[in-house]
Length: 349
Image (cartoon, rainbow, N blue to C red; front, side):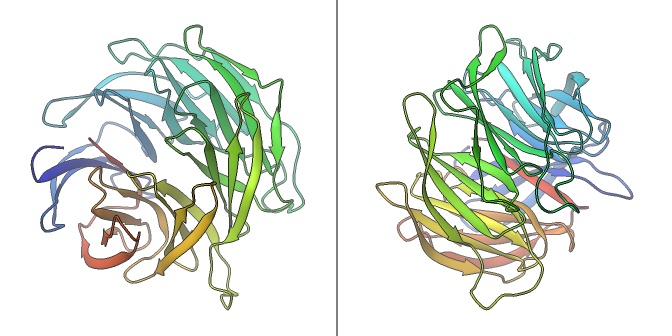
């Protein structure tokens, strides 16, 4: 983040036409978005994640690859290398706090993979994989495992994986030096509500809490994390209005940079719901917004905490909201930027 602007990337997953990573600039005074450049060398970079030092961007692609890209001083991207995703349809990628490992979740393959990352951002072949088994009660969506996201804790000790297909949050002990993942002997997994379909996860910066968004039921669950990495549920809330009865799928979950609020998006309801995180890890709703939101596959909050950008897959654009860092309230500002099927937003800090 430089002065009054911040750079960000948009990953895309277009069924037709170009599907680039788009570099943009957000004006923190006005909320205006300016496109800067596009990186078109990948096929369907649907999810992206930056390394802690901001020098490397990782993407998962429709070609069943994880790709490493170097980030220039002006945000321009250059290909470093790629590795097999070790499974079909990788849907999520994240990076260990040390920068030494990258993790991905294979949705169709129902598996995860972990990769050592060299200091220069080069990906080594997968050092750990795990193929899940089982199913859930909804045979149309849960006929087999569907790993949807993999998130490390802030201290890097543990990795949690949401498996939509088996209604489980898998739990691993991480060794970043060896690149190994070990099922946590204290709790190999947490069983979610049958048929709820856990999708995306955030770990609170304090390391005390994990918050899970489910896709198939509109519920959000906060957990405590103890010193052995064991998850214990604190509270589950419904993210939709009580009178909303139409079909819906949960999509993304993001923390406010100040750690006081968490937000989730829903497709069908087509809106964002915000919560204050209480001192004990509970969730208190602070508001819902729907204006100019259509199929919000992802959204993200700029590092200053002033703006939320919503990726509208169906209308091929972004919705811009301003945020009140004291109350968590969202206020619509503008619709911006024509971009083909935006599916992930990642800010440079």
